[in-house]
Image 1: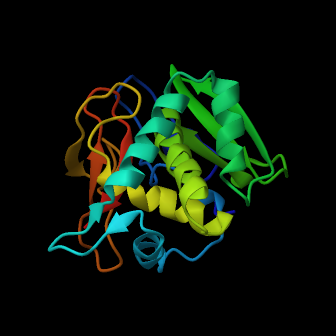
Image 2: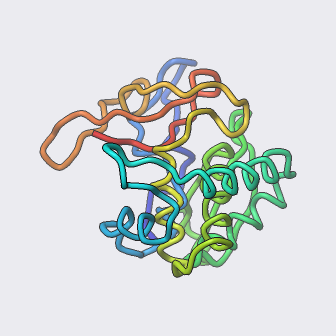
Length: 206
């Protein structure tokens, strides 16, 4: 499993309500697999989940409906049930728990070593979106579990609304509110889809 330091979204306070340290990238289902993500788009096109026949790449209509149905099934799931579903979609993880930190619900995937470095903390809205996508891929494609986990995160670029509060997502600077912006390998700032209400960050892109 890739490591993110074991803290939810890298959050830790050094004093005061607004004093937060720099945050690493928010955790996703893709952080709980060792699969290579370079071929994700090709996988999704070949599987029929994404349509690239026009000028723009778009979510295939049939797959979009299946994904939305899975989101609705998980949206009101209790934390333990959501955690179990997320674990099933993360083949590299061996343990999971649901926890609340500063009034935010997280699904915590673990490699079973009982060490913070082996944990991946995933915000509830991200867990719903990506676990739903992985379940839809499992039902409609032949992708291997490791590729489904990476593809499920990649599909987040097609989200229009937060899967929990259903607020329209905005494209904003990627990264923590008080830390430096996230950048690509060449130092260019990244943008991300963010829910303005619950401040959950989904997919980041250039």
